Image (cartoon, rainbow over all chains, first blue to last red; front, side, top):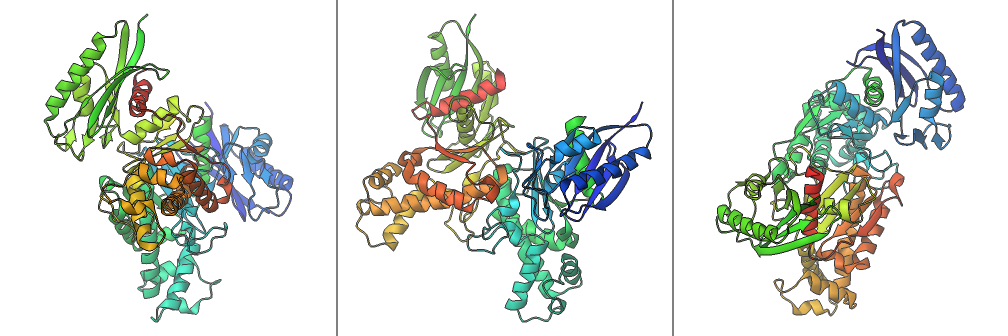
Length: 318
Length: 318
């Protein structure tokens, strides 16, 4: 019998990764190429096809069940990428249709955060859970909600936009046009903004004072906080307090068994987790207190997004 | 063939209603008796049993498929009423087990707001919808969330506690021990509090000035607002703005097709609906704008809660 695999594609702004993934989450093969989102979409499909042909030619005796694609602004229901920023591929990119056609296998797409949630469900901390929420704390804040072992999609396939839940109406300006969105506080970009606010508000010496806004990274803030820098530590406390307060709302809506955090900001570990958990518990409705696990994803490693896309394909085409 | 029915029970603090309901939502029979929550639970079961026997004896040729019960703090998974306020029946009341045993049919329970959501799904505005949210704006604020035609229950059967979503951390004190809970603003009690705040803040003449806090009712505020009373109208505007702002978050989580409002406060119609819709649209993430219907339930009438409980039984035992 042939070995069954799916193709997992992580379509990012800079590069695209293509992997073959078994049902148990083994990444059998992986190749990467430049996405070149400013070149025509046809040229992307062309290059993707060649990479795929190359991978397949090196693996005999496999059966490809389908392809899952994680991409920004990807809509599960329509199979299209909607108004993707940093791409010149049009307003509605027929991702599932064109990739499925070129690879000659059924194709399904979802956004990055939903893929991360599926990845946790199949391969991560969500394996034994039925109801949980995954938050990706990267450049922005993405979220994927799993209810009864199914991804919550909503009417248009884009439920779980927790990055744009409101912290306060007169809060920080968000790229989306609203003010006070959660991701303007809780994300790598959010904590950078917080560090700059704290550098303005507080007189303490800090290694953070030697970086420009452009130079500062989440990793630098994390390393400074772990090394005892007061400003950096305070930035994580502030971030965790806002996140925890909003997670109490999340629990009131969804009553999940667990909330799993992933992405760059989670490298700070307990520095983020402790203030978040404390603020969440403090604001939880009494019936929920002490019942919701708050955890950092253990998946890690460079193949996260491929695994998430593959998890979607396994769910859809197995 | 016998006519199939279910029993719908609306267990309230003051009175309990028992009805026979067909699958199309016809209430074939209904009786009411005093709940007497301060008397022992056994006595309640006894009286309920006699009322049920009486109803059955008057209806030949029916087959009872099961019983659905809507009750405060009812937990779908455990079949228990948890710490019900205003009852002396213990901390975990075995509602489903004891009622099922006495009536000799399978029994299922849920809280009032979840029953209302099921009622909309089977008999109301939710008939043709797959994903929607129902808010009951009565003494408190309850919510029931339907995802993919299923009630969202969460890990413990009590998901959808939107009454305790946070409006602002330093906001009004709530009976639950937290501050700033949504139901302290958006409910009959909430709008009473708002009227009293406005009577303090604003110098305008108002018919509201002739009532004590105890005398004031949602109906009085609604009638005054409809008659042009400035304070009462302003109270609905304030209530709608807070509700709409939080509903934008609801949409970011769930991306529902519609939000259906029901309960005493909705008698004000557009006075509540217009400011709510405006505030919601203003704060919606751009991908959701103009897509979510905001409606007032059309079910009305005295049998709402029985229909909701019956809907649960039909879903469970059909």
